[in-house]
Length: 155
Length: 107
Image (cartoon, rainbow over all chains, first blue to last red; front, side, top):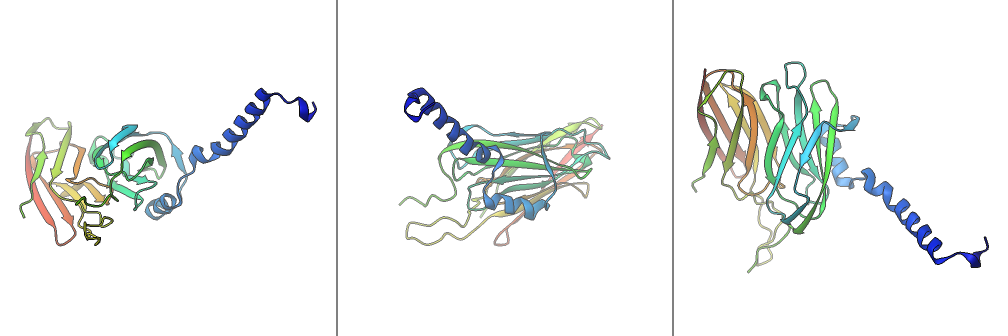
């Protein structure tokens, strides 16, 4: 096919594919640098697998000042198989940590609920540390229309 | 300054039941990232940690960061093992410390 004969449709299709190719790797599992550093500081550099963690956040929030968040981990919570800790991190707040929780076999159920602040539309990651030394995670994206944390007091 | 802390623990439970505990405490949770109207930084004032002990044994422990909303609200679970006292303790900046207790009867 000569250059002259490329149809408009082909051009659009090629452009679309190129754009998809360019954005895919980023949206797949790329997190902001500060979040990665915070994760490393909190838990080191273990292999973190997806799954077993359920991070429940509203997909769209009007006010980032109080966003209800529930993290639950699929675990039998017995003496030799329980969730040791849950860490939650954010991508774009001034500080990457959200909350760190220590649980034990006595927790009975590995679920926590709290309210968080979100400074921007961003991804939130929850990581659970199991008693057998494995790490599991879940990530959710939240769209925030009114940001928290950074807004100054109104006169 | 009076601090109001609300704790919701079931009064009675069967042995081995998983019970839900809800806690809410009044606190500004000032992040230290905001400016006041005259352009000055508002100093950080946070609750940094919260723990719950059940008859002296720690069953739940958490670290709060600026990303926790004002008036921190936390819900968690525990197994009702024996009748006793649950002690809740919040510790924060500027010497903030609040301890509250709740009793539970386990049959």
